[in-house]
Amino acid sequence: MGKILDVREMVPKDRHSKIFETFNALDPGTSFVLVNDHEPKPLLYQFQAEHDGEFDWWPLEQGPQVWRVRISKREAAGADRTITDYLQTDHRRLDGIMERFQDALRGERWEEALSGFKEFVLGLRKHIRIEEEILFPVFEEKTGMIDAGPTFVMKMEHKEINELLDRILAATAGHDGKTASEAAGALISILMDHNMKEEHILYPESDAFITDAERAQIIKKAQAA
Ligand SMILES: [Fe+2]
Ligand SMILES: [Fe+2]
Image (cartoon, rainbow, N blue to C red; front, side):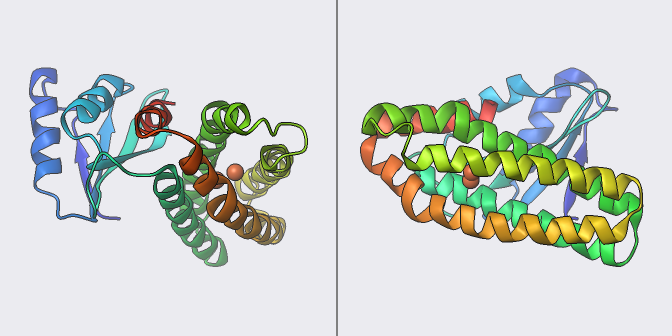
């Protein structure tokens, strides 16, 4: 799907300039997948330094041999993006991967289904880690709402979500389409409600409680998480 830039065969000193050339040539709202043979963290930091707010960085595969990350050019570029915008974009992106997974599952294209679902698991677990380790602590500190607040409920739901991810992964790997699609249905209905609560309550409240500088720091940390 879409453009792929595989830099594994290129001499290391040419890689970054080729990657930025590819990014600069993108139309707003489009993306490419970078394929590399190591964790591209220094590249992310270079993007953050030179293209703050202009890009999204979504890892699809993280080793041990191959690293793939989708780098997209944001439609409305600007360093002042909100937490709501950033995490909502990730929800939509994950919804798209889930749809393609279900399609592969229905067609019994097992290899495509399994690699697609692995991307989904990687993306959603990273998303949950960002929420639980970076965003929620800030929200709890600012609001004083910990044990009975919205983050507590979200964390409970994350546990349920994580269990379903394991079940779907095992069923897909075992070519058990019935179990996989039933569990995927359950996951989608939990996520619909969960994401809605985050997008309408938790994220906007977080945006309201923090300063612009804090918000920019949170997003940078989240990208590197
Ligand atoms: Fe969540
Ligand atoms: Fe979320």
